[in-house]
Length: 178
Image (cartoon, rainbow, N blue to C red; front, side, top):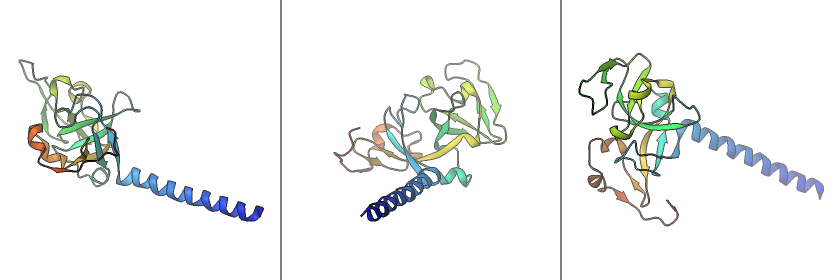
């Protein structure tokens, strides 16, 4: 009797460890769901939108201008930021805020990217902390999940009004409370 209970318990623990390892590898190397907060990416991503961030592009060095990425904050390594890639290494980028009369420019150094929020007037981004190392990028946002679970290629939303984005696959879901 004791042997049978011990065997079942060890079997359960073994399966739990296996599934835990599989989940860890999936979240670390494939992707993860992220809840975005703050106004810096409006209107593309609004406060409390859920996005899927895939990790393969980062590992394969396939991050391009216009991609929205999740990165570690240069100010606080415990916090992630969601921003759009404006410049890659060697690119000339504008470092001024939209309201500045005189525009200043700089070049993105090797191994770095320049990130900015879509809401330029309400975003803390590379204009504040400079270019960030490529290694701080956690993943590229490829799907957006909202209350109605709108799923689409997020890269195509650059410079498109939020109303036009709604021409997408919409599936009503009562499972999600966001």
